[in-house]
Image 1: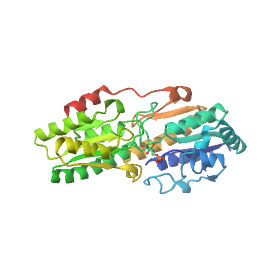
Image 2: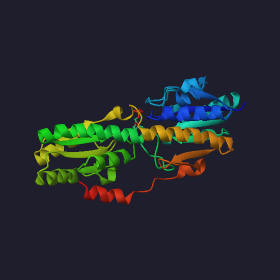
Image 3: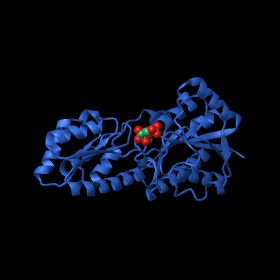
Image 4: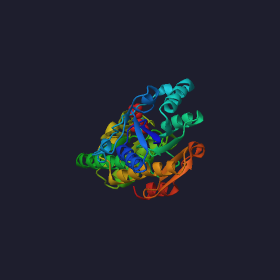
Length: 318
Ligand code: F6P
């Protein structure tokens, strides 16, 4: 019987369990044996794995996180460690390794592929920062979590006549801020260092105040500025009470949305049908409904196109 392996790597994302389940159920249906590598590339390096059965993925679909565990394994940046992991894969008689993760995990998979391991990558990260797919597993749930949090912050902000600056995750990608900001009627959405200006934010807050708004919401992607300092500056310049809120890890957890369960399941099963057709060394993608793939060499180099229409929305909807 042919053997496959699956792992989750990098930041956990809601819907990863659905993807593991989708792959396991489809693999067993197609008569493959499938093992789960524990804790991402760290487990691959240490040869730590479990056998996966129909039952080992039962009751996982509606749970956040990843039951296989995950890690950020810096040792994988060293080629000698990648070679050791590739040897483990070959030693286990694995035909193909399925990797669920974000950008860093794709780079790890690419290194393994360079050392002769067949790989299939599935986009799993809340950041939505992978160019070879429209949606990553976990993004939709994270956006919904952020929207729920901002709605609550708005209730309080509105009661106190305050401005609230909300920092969201995304690493270098502004998709969470954009989608959540537009969905909550934010007065300003900042997603890049290049578009960040303290004075433009001050102007946005003053503009809101002139329109007699009782609250102003500013949504900003992480790693752009210190939001606590920014809140102090805005308060000093506008005389409007301003608070900063860093949403943090609540964005990674929680019950996966229907969208993330669906795309996780679909991507997991699609990986198996492609492996069965001898299509490997690819990165899978989805538009939220259908599933497609890009060769890994191309996917690694791809960049996300800029969405001009969102710029228009930011301008007219504030
Ligand atoms: O990639 C997902 C993510 O949550 C990013 O949005 C964030 O920058 C990062 O992971 C945080 O990483 P860590 O879990 O290592 O703190």
